[in-house]
Image (cartoon, rainbow, N blue to C red; front, side, top):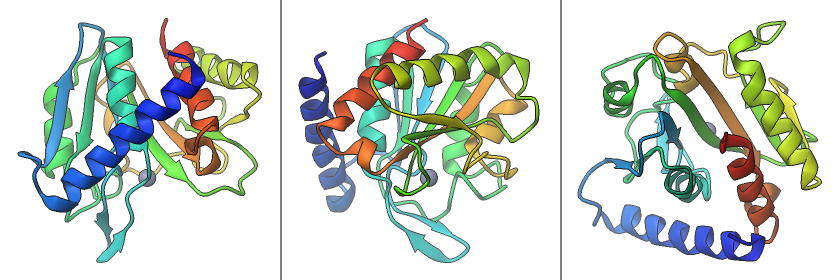
Length: 212
Ligand SMILES: [Zn+2]
């Protein structure tokens, strides 16, 4: 997909998902779509509003549409919430929460789990890859981190590992994956990287990095 086309498709899908989540027409709370046989699971656990410690937090714009399209193009599996959530699957430790329980049924030791989030602008990078904050970065996560940093660099965007968000809280989706599968990371995308036309660059850089 060209960069402009990627942006348009994501914006359109994002509007449709938002409409469905607001009107409650979605027929399940967590949506899972199997697109192909690759052991790649693309999640966007904050794609709809969620509740952290009693406080409602906003949906992270475009992340659900990005996860759906990435899964489709890469031939893996997409998992996103379809309705507002009464808990926070990227914070709460309760493993029988609906989102984590659904995710657990998809994971095996060969899975590569990517959980996509949105962060504010101002941290100085377009993408922050959360690996848990260990120094050095665990060896099994280095290839995917290098690939993301270089793909973003090629389109003139910047990426950091674990700065400012390292996903080390034990309730994160990334942490949920560390004990269950081969590779698990969190991706935080800045607001400006999720707005057209840069959104198209972001999407194409993600596709390039995760294609191998
Ligand atoms: Zn988030």
